[in-house]
Image (cartoon, rainbow, N blue to C red; front, side, top):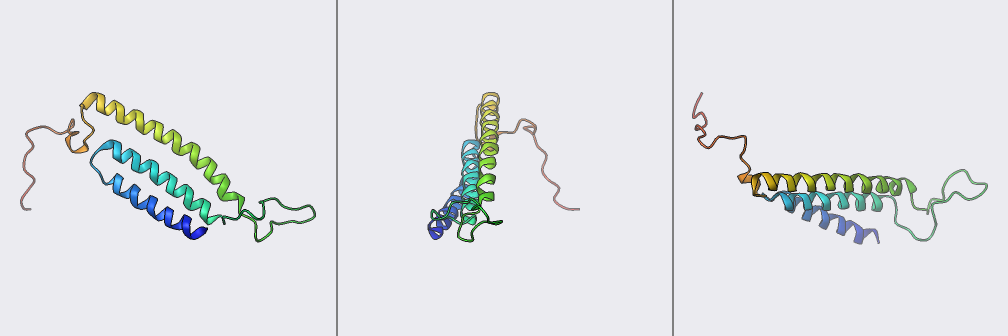
Length: 125
């Protein structure tokens, strides 16, 4: 089961990097969302995926059974889901506002702070 999840994590990371290298802000935003999901799945896979033993300490024992799934990555994933959702909502608003002001989502055309008549860079020192 971990092999399938590991392959899926690699696929998610590859798709996220491909989308984040785009020059369109919507694709960059989707790449960041997929990257967050890839990290969550990576944490989930690292915490041992096993349906056999629940992560509950039995009565009289002081530690978890070695075959049990680690509950810490699951708690980290729950926190990461909330954080990534709020970050994605912020990016969506930021992207929409930039599109309203600049009338484009192409990052190569977002040149508000740069003048149209740019001087050439220095050719020598």
